[in-house]
Length: 254
Length: 269
Image (cartoon, chains in turn blue, green):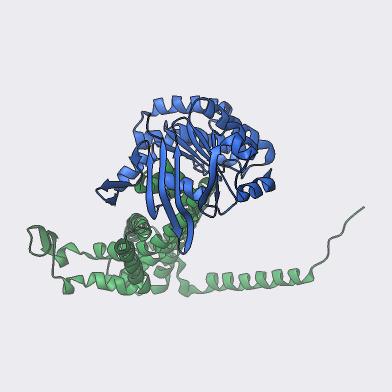
């Protein structure tokens, strides 16, 4: 069996005195879609940000594609990697943010071509052709030259997905991709994510859309107060939660 | 039906007062022969004055370029995760913003008393590449651009820092998540978006710099003010020659203000 795409082993993360993640262990197989659910403040966004080293973990280890993230291990010691190595690793991991974070001074097309050209050295013509293809895929062929402030929230988020895909990532991280959207715009973004799932993209999605998690997720992980309360098959877990806390949470959101 | 606006007699009164005052000022300016307007006319386009004006413009431009480049570097250093680098930037700004520009100008002009020779090489007894007497290297012009440029850098550093702070952290996170390095992120993502906040105060700095170059007169560099001083030292026509300088300063600052508006309008969109 091939090694897992993402592996977390006893990950701990503190912000000052607050323990945000406590001994979190988790595994995501290649091609799997894992949805992280839980009440706000449960640590699910932080968990996601630890996977691409946007947050430094305080203890434990994180592997992506069988390679430690952020550190190099020699014997029993971990050495933090130089910035260039961390950047190389991050380039393999796409991320989509709740607030889109599109580059405000660039058009949709430039948003998508910027990183391949700058980070990977892709020739501009190739990057542009690829960006046009990706923006067409998310249904925005007619918005290539639009600035972020000329786009709706849903359109911005779809540009952000295209931007992440342009780096040809092995793994996609979604941090509440639809939480900042007007209800009528959520569907378009979820459709894009659903299509990626069908193509076999490995994804970790922090979401409050339980219906979407049940439909698209292979596995659901329920977090509360920095611990994995339970995880398992998406349909099974949502239909028959074993823990009281999961049940309480689901009854509130469903 | 006709709508009659409220009458505002106070405004009428104020207008009359202002008009009267203006009339008094204009009358005195025109009728007082000691303004010696014909002398102003004689010198306004004289080769010497124009050379002085050119020197003022050159000082302004060169000092601003030094100030902007060094200031941007200081602002980026200030945000460095390395405490020593950030502290160095803080210390620079502390000294250069905390002392009068006039004093700094004098310091640079007397630098040869402190360091008689200036050399470029490896410090602490290493080989020397270039060496010269400080008096030869630090001419009044060099002292002037050092003082103005290094002082400006401290102010520009604060302006650029405010600009960088105005860019949402999410921009940096998005850039990092795509694999960009810290410097790539600053150069390609953060600084271009900081411009919106940086440009308006920078325009003010350019105008302030033009006026501050007049301080250079104290170290005997022939910019606009010192040039007219040299002329009236011989001709004793202080007032008309100061008017020559004043009008030129006003003309250039007005042009700069117009340019500032045009640039700001472009950056905002």
